[in-house]
Every structure is written in C-alpha cells, then in structure tokens.
Length: 594
Ligand code: ADP
Ligand code: ZN
Image 1 (tube, rainbow, N blue to C red):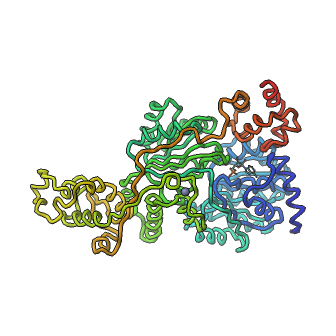
Image 2: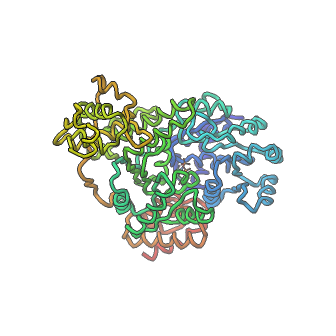
Image 3: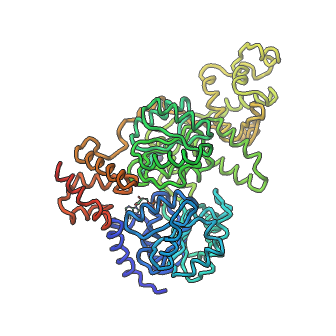
C-alpha cells in the first residue's frame, strides 16, 4: 500500500468533477477518500447529508477491483444503485428482490463492477465469501455501521458476522460509515470491525440548514397543516402508531389538498412499496409514517420532518430529522410533543430488561432535556454529541423567539404534595380540582376538601398547573400509574424537601412565523419553472425520481447563469460527464427558449 497523498487527492478531485460534477469535497470527505485510496481502514462518522456514500463510490471508480457495500435495507441499496448508475458508475445489487443475479455474478467475476451492494445476512454466509474470492476486491464499505454495536440504538446481530467475512480478505481495507455514534459506540464499532484507533474521521454533527423547533401539541392536524403551508416541498411526518398514521394521513390530505400517504408495517407490501415510490418521485408529497420509514430512503429534497409525539432518543431524533434537507437547502425539523408521550415511554421502560434499563432511562432524560430547554436546541443537540457549539445558532425556535423561563418550584411542591396526599392514584384533572378548591362531588365524597392542599392554588398559578405537570412528567418526577393516575418518581422527594428547583419554559404566545422563508428556489421565474418541468418529464421517462437527474441547486444555477454551451453547462455544480451527455442538450434548449 503506497502513500502518495497529494497526487492521489488530485486525481480524486478530477474524478469528483468528471463523475459527480462537484467542484470540491465537502467537510471531511477528502480525508476519508484519501485514507480509502491509500488502503487504510477507517470509521467515518458524518451527519446525514454530509455525503458519506461519495467516500466509497468515488474510490470505487478509481481502484482496481470491486467495492462491496454492506447495507441494511434493500430500498436503500436500490436508491443508491439508481444514483450511482445515473452518474455512470458500474453498480449492482444482490438481493432477494433482484432478478438479474446471473448477470451480476458474471459481471463481478469478469471484474466489471465498481460497486456491489449486499445485505449483512447475505454477506455473512460462507457461499458469499467463496463467491467474492473469484475476483479482486477493492474495499469493504459497511453502511449504518452503528448497527454492529450493542451500545448503539439499532443493534443488528447480522452485523456481528461481518468480521469473519472481512478477516478472510485481510488485505482489503474497510470503511465503516455511520451518522450516529457516541464515543462508546464508536469504540465498539472500531473494535468489532477491526479498524485501528487512528482510523476515526469524525465530522461535525451540525446541519446548519435544518431549523429545529419543538412545540407543544394542541391540535396536530392544524399544526401540521400550518407547517405544510410554509413548506411546499416533500415532507415526512412521524407518528407513534399505525392508527395515528392512518388518521393523520387522511385528515392532512383533506385539510391541505396536498398528496398525503400513509406508511406503516400494517400495510400490505405492495401498498407500502407503492407509497414509498410515490413519495420518492414526488416534489410535493407528504408521507405520514411510523419510524420504520426513512432508513431506506435517500431522498435529498425532503423539506421538513415532523414528529407527532417524542422520538425514542436524541440519537433517534437526530437520525430522523437528518432526513430533511440533505441537498443543503433550508429545511425544518419540528416536533409536536405532549406530556403523555414521556409518560408512555417511561411506562414502556419498565418492560426493558434490567441490564439495559439504566441506559434507556438516561436516553429518555436527555431527550426530555432537549424538549424542555429554553436554550438553543442546536447547542443542546451538538453538546450531546460531544461538540462545543456556540451558545446560539440563530436557526432554531428558541434562538428565533426567546422563550420566557419561570421558576415554579413552589407550585411544583403544591402539586406533588397533592399527589402524595390523595394517595398517588389520581389523574391531573382530579388533582386540579383539589388544588383549586373545586366543590366537586367526587372530591367531597372522598373528603379531599379537608386536606391541607385543598384550594391552595389560585389565579394565574392555576393556569400553570398543566405546564408544571408536563415538565415534571418529562423529567420523570411524576410518573403515570397503570390506571392513569399520577405518582411520585425521580427527584420528587427532593423537590418536596426544597432541595431541587423546577423551572418551566413559557412558550411564546402565537407563532409569528413569516411565510415563504423556506425555499431559495426562484419559484415563479419562468425559466426555473420550465427547467423543473423538463426535469419532471425526464424523470417520468427515465423512471427515476427528479433529484436523480439534477438537484434544485443545479437548476437554480442553470436559471441564474444561463449557460449557452455544453462546456458551460458542464461547469455547473452537479453536472458530471454522464449527465451532461444524457440531458445536456435538452436543458440547453430550454434555457435558449426562455
Ligand atoms: P449521507 O449518506 O451522508 O447521508 P449522501 O451520500 O446521501 O449523504 O449525500 C447527500 C447529498 O450530498 C447527495 O445528494 C450528494 O449528491 C451530495 N453531495 C455529496 N458530496 C458532495 C460534494 N462534495 N459536493 C456537493 N454535493 C455533494
Ligand atoms: Zn439555536
């Protein structure tokens, strides 16, 4: 393995322009590419949208032999396949969904494949190992590599078997890729996959084009419809259950007139595949889905990701929201949460086995911290991943509209002692009646009007009871009982004893958000619109999603610079040799006509 870094990177830059049409590497891509080209095994941790796939696709076109890509989902592989082929890269997949096995195997044996995608279950079989021996290998690329670690949030036993395969080809370098890995998971992935300690390339986690917002859920259909009105492009809405998914998809479609489709494991496979395909191809569709959706999709032009209910962890949240704005254009990540979400999540933790429970509770607490914070959301997120971000980002709800913070320790103590004195079995509605001194029949019957907490909350404070209860639930200081009541938990006793304080964020009154600040596209410019239309026609003709032809950013450049020759068009970002040849003339003609 020779190390001549400079010429290697120079020729890599030439290939980058020729194959992908990109003028330069992004973030830490260059480092990863350089390591791969010089045969060093590497773990690349880069946020979604950073351009991980390029770090093996590009070397695959430069190195002798095939790059084997291990990827967890067929849909993801097929997506990648399409994009790679559109750039003229010789790629194939070997999955149960493929009919062209013979051709693929023949092409591999003949040394005619740059990229071969397989799933971990297949990759770990002895027969596959034997098959790989028939031709030279350039690289093993392991996508979603956090799946190899039990510390990760997405452990998959099949990933554990990959080590055997790779050890059988000790001279072939390994490139592990993931968007989410805390330091423990990172160390584990490197140990599991045999990557040396100096092989870590850790890119910043920031996704500056994503605007984070976390708000209380009052009327999800109205709230989502408002978000959709501000975001004309494709979007993903995550909902916790199949029933919610179905319900929201129907109501949102009716409320907005936009195409909205459901996606969850209960749909039959054909419908699911059809809905996903329609979403991938669309420039305006919203898909309402359970979290299972999205891992297999590489759609770069998703303009928003919304959560109705809380995700499982900050890692999960970051991964799911990371599906927005991969193309670098402005995008939104908006969560609509309710106190009940945390209560349900904490209840579920009771079923988790002892060994994992501690870690899961810590995950949930970190998430509650993000939801409840009055600080910059991005700063909280990035600190969670071990970074040292500036205190304000200017592109999240809390930075754009500073929320007020109120000390509610006294009120929290009143609420907690009411919970305690009524026997830790009543719900919030009942507790409110006791605290505000309602002469409710149930209260009187039980003699709760004689408790010291009866009627001790009045005026303004009464309105704060709900938000305080929510905050206490999010922190785990109030926990739901089996029968829907509330009981003390976490540090409730410390609060009661005056050893711990409680603050809540007072949400801004009404969203005063400007409209139309979300897309830099010159929509309404006749040339830009015509270019989009041409792209749509070509996409239908070629049966690929529009973004596989060109991204919006490339169309914007075309409209702004109006190139008049193939040479000029070829200089624009995102226009590689293959695409120039395939589409160049038609785009030039459209430009000339406007
Ligand atoms: P990841 O797998 O890290 O989430 P992708 O590989 O899907 O990210 O890349 C995200 C988008 O960024 C893709 O549409 C890709 O074409 C684009 N991209 C990647 N590298 C570059 C680059 N150097 N310059 C411009 N765009 C890039
Ligand atoms: Zn911020």
